[in-house]
Image 1: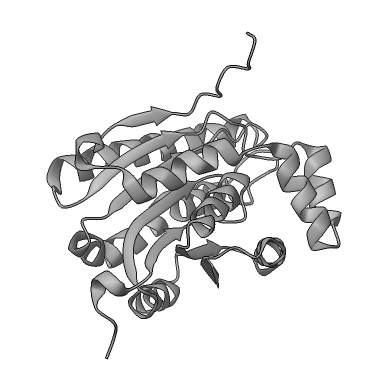
Image 2 (image 1 turned 120 degrees about the horizontal axis):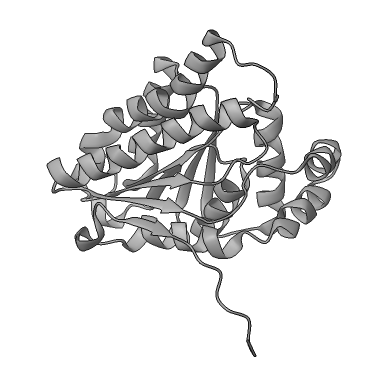
Length: 251
């Protein structure tokens, strides 16, 4: 028999967890003893995240899932694992550009794949876990970072995806009073510059990977997203929030 709901560990799902904002959000949740179910499309990227988290020795539990959310089998596995791990209180939908990094022309197949991966597939997961979130009066946090190195054509598709996600936030807030839905713009450039991408891809040890992550200094934005996932109340539902760096002392 499972533990009483109130005695079970809090669980938050974070998509695209290897992205900088995804990793930092996970770190701040794990610092607070939360179980984070992190999702990545590729194993080598997830391996870097798990190696770094092991070095930090955080009190929370990290549960990795690798694959594309276009797979209903993967979605069902995640939903089943949520029930095993504890009380699901938030879904952090970290919207981004995935692996579409070339500046060249974008084929119709690529456009559709990007829409599927960035918009349709995460919503499929949301609908699968929606009832569980409702029971906990949980939260949906849609995160839209700046992916500035993906090329103009891809950026336009990505902008359309993020606009749709932000509208979905408003719709959830309007029609589902049992959930709190907020949209967040961390006000950062999430996609790596070519130099940092090369450094991250060639890092061989967890410490080197951690140095790359720390160099981006995304923890404040990640802390904001983690706090919203844990504490945003119904009065905030439907809001679009932009993270602003605090002013430097003496300025």
